[in-house]
Length: 94
Image (cartoon, rainbow, N blue to C red; front, side):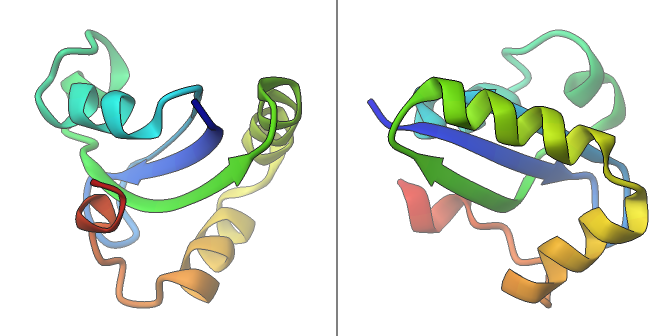
């Protein structure tokens, strides 16, 4: 399994959620199917708009913590640099 950080959105420039996982496909499927109780289910945050892959989970967790400290404008700029149309990246990872 490859570690990853990911950003989900409710819509373009909508509510954002940052997570970390050792299995990106499984975790995003869980979010999309409301298998994860909590924030993403409550606010309908299901669109995969950004992700980064890592060789180990320690580096992924470090990056997740870094991104969570960023202000919203920086997070949006990061997303839009790689995904300017805020396309759902789910089909690219399955």
